[in-house]
Amino acid sequence: MRPCDRWRESLAEFALGAPADPGLEEHLQKCRSCSAALAKLQSLTGEMDRGIQQLAFAEPDVEAAAGILAEVASRAEQSRWWGPTGRTIAAAFAAVVFLAASLGISWRHRAQREETERALSAAAGISRWKPPTRELLRSPYDGLLRGRPRLGETFYRLDTGGFGTGQSARVRKEKRKP
Image (cartoon, rainbow, N blue to C red):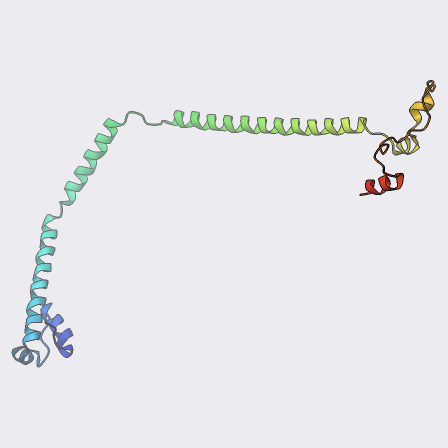
């Protein structure tokens, strides 16, 4: 059942132990829904009070907690099979520093090796360089001019690509132009 809207807050305060508002007791005698709501609120507050009392009694003793913590600490000391000491930590730190230095040195050597390979590759490219004037002054007939012509060979090249196809030289030239 729902209580009346006018008395809702007054009912909650009265169920929690506050003094009743003037006129609330008269209204409770006349209104069944407000009386039922008050009874329900009072039973709920009673249950909450009992729960809080149980929690308060179930709370452990302050000195018992210190004893439990001491027992846990002593068992932890007994069960510890390895604990890093100052020397162990220093040795581990030294190993990490040595490993980092080794990696840095190997990385640097690798970078120097790559730089040397690039320089040697550039030097090899320079050794294959030909001056452009030599190429410009070179003739396709240099090989023939250096040696003696053999009997039966012609000095000029003949294009025999179109013989037997029925194409004229002009048509072959047009096909070659891309």
